[in-house]
Image (tube, protein in one colour):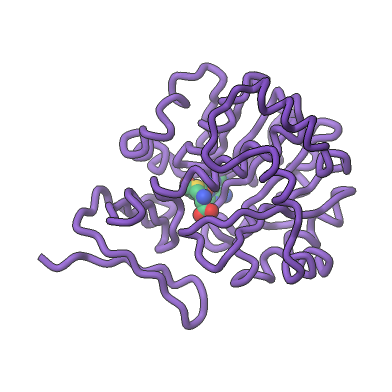
Length: 285
Ligand code: SAM
């Protein structure tokens, strides 16, 4: 039988196509189309509404960089929130930090969590046995306008700004997260691949700047988010968080005793050195 193909058409005139001999799950939930399939190079691949979300081959880069950079920069985060993150790989990395007392994850689509529990246990099984993990099935944008909880770090592990994820890139959402941060707290967002999605980064940075004292970004290269570096948005009232010295990060990393495959304190420092075209996008925002 000929292999089935799944294509991501996120950018004009450019298409990314995966071949698969085995579709493991396919469904349309109330919120989005979900498909999980096996690919010879990337392992299990999850696509939502035709856009790659996570693969077993390269998830470690995205999850380690989005969890450990903010948490080691903060140094003492006790209460953390993840918005989205349905595959629960981000939660697994956050819960490796012993200082974290509660992790609240606000995911709109329960079906993503349910089948990720079954199919992505290689990287998320510890999450579901951890008493610190609290899953809320809700729209992240609504949650932050209603909750009394206050967080040290909020991570927005969202889909791209289309469909249910669009609201997670809005000024009002960023403002309501700001209101739920503890003093000196930090918001980190997935902000797309600037080579292909420059305007997304410019717009988020401009919105952060109207709310937070510091708006910036750091980067990592993740193979399945094609187009070069991915940008992570960084918004806080505490400018010191971006420039924690290497020796301090190294001590925190050693004390946490976390095994990583991508993150190191040196990579952490280097991730804030932006190529000029990305720096220009941040300056424009
Ligand atoms: N790492 C991925 C990426 O960059 O493509 C994102 C992974 S994660 C699977 C994205 C999650 O965000 C999905 O499970 C989706 O259901 C969730 N999501 C989208 N919009 C949301 C919203 N408004 N509130 C909460 N979760 C949302």
